[in-house]
Length: 358
Ligand code: PEP
Ligand code: MN
Image (cartoon, rainbow, N blue to C red; front, side, top):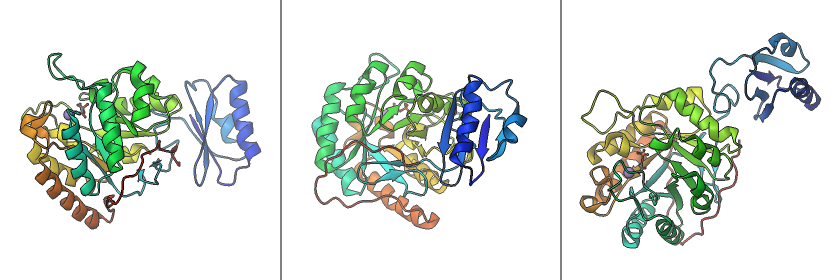
């Protein structure tokens, strides 16, 4: 149940609503928006009488929410969540759309530096790269682990880039969060509930990929685990789902973009690299993602895709990446939402992002 307070509701009226709830043993959360405050009830609200609350001073409307999605829902949080980083760069709301780019996995210092240089030269601020890789086969390259994180730190500081990297184990979360500016939860871990709970207690944005077989509601409920743990910085990432179509690696569900925008206030970005599994299809789907209203795209790019230790078939070559960037700029112009591009002048030190603004 959510209780929407009137625009001019007094603090005492809001506090009174919260007190009546807590007297009944119900835990609530106050969500202060730009225009209105909403009191959201966390957990079960069966047995609560709507009319008790709708007639209270300062209350505009009481809605019984049938969907189990609460904190991630636009009903409880009408304004877009905007994630803001130390230098003012932001993701979500009406911020410019962002590009996150880099190799699937950190393989070597040379590979990472060459990619970071390309990415930065093209105005991109976010470098992706897995140090802990969720591989289908236990015999495939599993990533460089903490050595890979050290390389990400070194190279990202050199080029003034923010780091996006994956966490797989709950116990690693606090340490990875020290390196990462955005902590990625891979598709296979979308329902790793202990991991999600752990990420609820870190002060870093979490990029939550959609599980390959998950519904929109399951995905939002996974986000709910992180949000209800106290971390309000969640970015959703559509990365393709499994359907009967097997020509491509997955079926990229771009309809998820406008749908998520309707259902949730959380930013959503699209990963056409894993979503399609073919480098030739990455740029067209990136263009489509921005045109559909995504807050950004995350793509894989590699200096030598044929020799990549993971996901080489879907990695863009440097030439393809540069071409894609110029196309995305044109899409940004067409939809009146520019792509974030920042010229690289001197190395910047990357600091921890500040908390979400809304
Ligand atoms: C990745 O980003 O390299 C990755 C493994 O992605 P996903 O979890 O979407 O498969
Ligand atoms: Mn990959």
